Image (cartoon, rainbow, N blue to C red; front, side, top):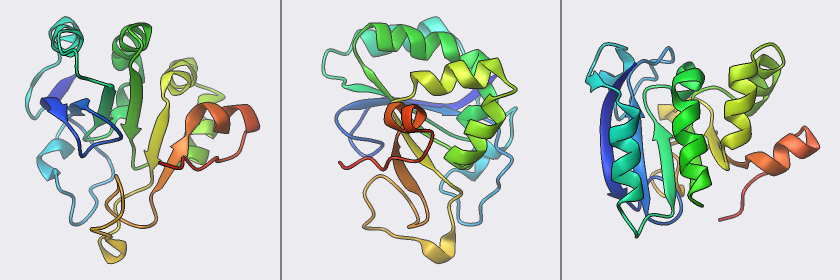
Length: 165
């Protein structure tokens, strides 16, 4: 797996002070994407979990990690260990995806890696970026079709529970 970039601190990719990992590889190819170079799975540099983990835990100001892309849900198996370790340190996990929560939930029934990975996510911003629904004033999302979802509550209810920031 390659990564398209890593920010050791950000305040625009989720609530609070966050580290942001951008994975390479995305099947969605949304017109107007802010990170089109990340569509190519071979773009960027090789993912080294321990390097990313060390940078995150050495920053005492962080509230959590945000996974972005590319498409993080293509790499559930590769990212699972990192998110598990980060959660064990008391930090939260946000993830962006072009898939919908309902799609992920359905696929997780047959994919144990996806199921375990989804259970580690606290907040999910789901749905493809749609340039015709671009909302520059939308909090933590690029277009108004995207939802900010409380994943633990949604998994418990088996229906989408919107996160109120």
